[in-house]
Image (cartoon, rainbow, N blue to C red; front, side):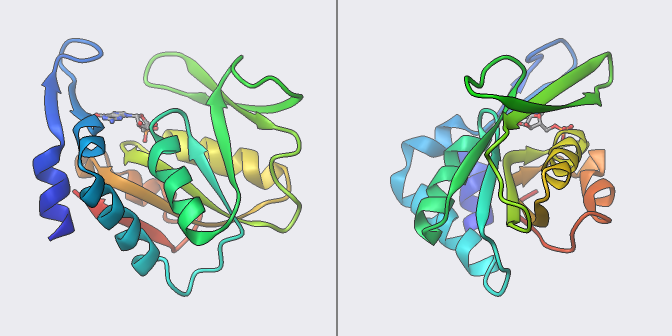
Length: 174
Ligand code: 5GP
């Protein structure tokens, strides 16, 4: 039910951000408050039994439902951002992209050692971004409690890549 609603709200944008890529635009979901509430409800339901102390949301679309979910669970939220965006002292992690490298960062006081962290993003593609986020969090003493995504691009096999990091994976639509 929720899967169907998410899939019908998402739109495919051909050749964005570059030729040959079909981009899944999740922004129309945000125009439906009941759907947003149901998405958070589905995450809460499917994460029952998982101990989560804090949610790390990946810039920038990971902030949307990541913060809503953290608020619903009554736990803290921290942003993981692209290089140069965070104002306080930062810790960073470089990771490989198809062409070149990217850097993600978080504040040095984002996580307490031993905290169980749910990593949230809007979409799972190759899994490269959340793998780098996992490494960053682990280096700061956090424990990866699991992952949550609104949607995945299954053909890129991100699931397989992140499976060794945590067994807990919630994806609402494929
Ligand atoms: P990955 O690192 O798993 O290959 O890529 C996932 C990251 O790229 C996520 O932060 C996600 O927001 C972004 N991304 C890649 N492709 C798409 C897409 O088609 N739609 C959306 N909404 N995000 C995408």
